[in-house]
Length: 393
Image: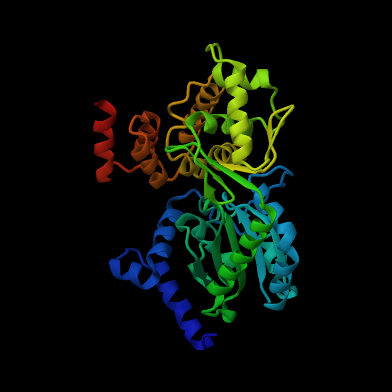
């Protein structure tokens, strides 16, 4: 633990930075580039000046973080014990920075409740400004936010340590864990503690997902079973994708129609495909109706769930390419059209220019994202003129 006098001096220096009317490279270096960038984003966001607590929502049973919620059933008691023994409040949030689970020591309980650092608290940067939970999700790295580095003055007495939670099979970012206490208790080992808690959840995910199928359908299609890449034909990947989108299962006729439409392909051909898939999946493919018996995750399902939850930036980040670009399946083509329509609507509600710029880099034809960037960017930004030329070309 650092000496209290040193911590007080650190607070004073941070306050001097906050009061500074102009920024320099030295400021960013001394403060930390990630904190400095977050301050700039926070200052340009429409956050009410009198905001002292995070917006609070009622969590639905079916949330974007169902995978995390299930994993917490295996490790909640261990995490609760850590929070109580360390005089901290511990929170797990989903990809949209909404807290889905929390546990607190008696010392932090009242403080956590007063700022809504509890289940349902929305800690997105554009809502509450700089905080470790949102910063860790944005950078996908462990983050510490000390005292008045936070944007909201109501948590200037806090120090927070956060670490991303990654699916051990797919390496997909699922959420974040945050440990918080008072700034006087700041410890250089805090980040290690957060990372240790993240590993506890990741171990629980392994326990929960003993038979896990992960489908990547954006950009280069790929299927992983228990973390290992399966050698499959494009048609077999299409079949698994259809079944992932129809968890209730499909009859042979319905699956044939979804896959081939009016193309003249025999039922025997599809039966042969299903037989091969059953061998590859080790019995994790049910019949009558055909359905997947393994735990299924997919980049396109996460994108859909992100859109359902209103996590626009998360959805755009997940969409790394065209959904099954070469498919001729009428069912999958229709689903792709629906998804692209929803993503286009989301683009016009997105507020993060860096996310939109990456989206345009992946999809050069995304004029909707270009138009939204023109709306968001100041005319003095060098990229603004480039975007205008791109739109008119």
